[in-house]
Length: 640
Image (cartoon, rainbow, N blue to C red; front, side, top):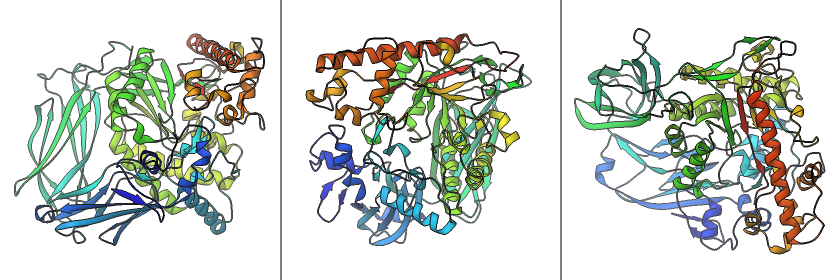
């Protein structure tokens, strides 16, 4: 595949993005994270890029009744043509698109072209159009050299526009597979499951299986469905008539009791109860009496139940903790941000190393943070295997989002597809609508709160709870959990320590004093600043930048901006000074000393906080505070 603008044409890889392609082909001469390359290479994100490939089609493929171009992930706003005919448009990185190309393709050579718009320029234009049409601004944004604005107007990884811990590289590209799919009858797209102990015989299990099927046929299909577990038949030669909806979707539902000759070992999180992460291979096979065609999907599943327990406590509070197979779980873990700003640079080995390390550190939960991406199938499969529960944010973070019908429709498709793709994973413990947006609503006017409830309550909550009854949903993180409904999901204080989950950061007080920390029910995000190692710094900056006081290069990599106007490097120094004498202001040796002190300070601060949460089990009957049953830290390094 090739991509090009007027002056540049290079080979491209799929999956991939423009930054990787231009770097690999030598157009970008330096490593992306070196120097100030996030600024120097920003021009890439302001251009429009076209990806093109010539491919061959044979008569056998075109003889099929239904032939589609299937795009599993385009980043982000594009027009797609085949043989110079427009077949579709995309505007959501997190949606799978499918277009009928049977009458566009030809035997022999064909050309597919994906023309992608600049993400920052698109989102800026959409923000302007929205303000002109609806007469209010969704969210003001102060544009600086470090960031791009209006990520809330484009459905792509928000952190690609920069965050306080990372650079702006607003990617474009085909970030997941793109190919032709053809068939005569139907295909199984996803499988969803819901496992429960048999109420009559608790040591046996029943489970619901929902096969999501797609077809181009508007007339009923007589199908044959087989279901096996680890190769042993559960449903054999079941005849079912499939009648699709106008969009070609149909669902086949089964409730199955596991026979006695298939012993089931329950799935548990790391370190809980029997500490077993037994997985089973579930296959659903679709065939037809009048055709040789077969479609099958195989998923690894675990048998477990999960509840989010929210029962009354003294002091007018509610508990907030996970219960797996009837066992209360103290959640120990971390927040997961994108492991690389370029998703194509992540290897399965690297992701495995990170998750194995989390398990080795006795973690049992990772919170997939809402400013990144819905992670890869590899990520969730590893979490299943290692017993790491996933708190899954939907990909909305730290800003109000538009409430217009077009945006809501795209969000509906996104949520429905992601629920269907991920639901079968036993590791996923909870769906959360967004990161910190309800909290943000405390400072917004009613028109923004109406938009918030439209997207996250009326649509998202309805879709998620309707599709998946096997795990809980909360509209936001943090939130007051069940208490949110009393105040119509935009509460005055969404970090009330009596309810729900809490996010907490404090850079203004001595951080080794545990009395400054919240006595909440579940601390789902907290952290402390420090510098990464000197070796990490030297992979991105020259020796001349390794100085104390912090050089411009070092300061450029701390986007904290809190308090306003104060660089995060200065905040680190102030925190260290609460307990240590700062180094003398000279060269690299003293900068190495500063790094060491920042990491000691961070380690002690996190230790003080975690130890408080681990022992803070009792609820104060006067305040309702306490009863902590979860602590998920977010270790804040500056990006390198």
